[in-house]
View (tube, rainbow, N blue to C red):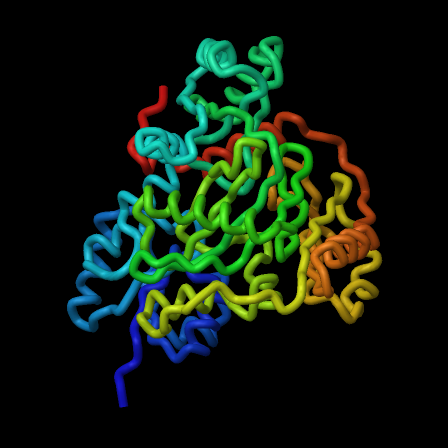
Length: 429
């Protein structure tokens, strides 16, 4: 009988630990004390846990290297944006399969990625670093309006501003300062339809798994996704070529990838990429439509416990997720959730703000009130059903007086927490 495969999981939440248990893997779990305390005792008792700040590279590598020497690991895995760089440090230090630190840094650092792609001539998009009003005005004068100003290494649709005309520059500069973005990235505005592409690579051979249409709303916040994407065979080939070229360019030859693409009149343009599965319930949708659990696949790949997939899977149905919103205030009652949950085509329903909690101002993905995921025969039907069911859920709130100062401080803290520039070696004023 062969020995169990052993993996190191960084920042693992409950679903990932349960998947590891279902695969029969032996787990070394590296978490912060705060993350550890949120887990059920039944899971923490079944794994070896090291509680530390995994952003302390030297401490992380020293600790895990000692454990690896005593009982060798087969791989390192995470699915969370904040732990991708720490996982890459371990991959390099221990010589394990996976994305190197240099590759993950390119994917995390949007400016470095743009420069790398530009030098390679792959899907070029005009971009530059900025530190204030003067740089914003100069970028607009050189590249035209509109354009985007956003965090260099942020996520979750937070801190993104569109500059439509020269007259907007002073106001956008002020808003960037208010959220603490002393250093930011400026990019040309890509006009078109946005999609996301999840896939997996085996020793440099890319397999496209799921292509998803995206619905965005105010502030570039994502309010829905549907799959399969409404693309013909030629468009899919073009998308696959773009993704493959991008991954080859940044050196991501192994494991999961999630790439966001804008379909413009000039062809597909890379928005950004990640060496992880997509969020926003795409895993549930991919499992439903294509029969592929991305998280389980990535975990099995990291452990060396999966055979290479021969080709892209065929869609067997369609699925969609719709995110709904609520007014600011303290939640007094949630209406419609039980009715929607009972619908035969609903796969998941979640309310982010239960009774007694406060609904904040809508600033980023986690401020959405909740979501509903459905299955249908076509993507169009799924999208319409998800939006209809989402509209039936209503959070009744007792309005609270807006505290603009507290809101601004909270927004600034969120941007600072998600923008990883300090971990990438940037110096800000």
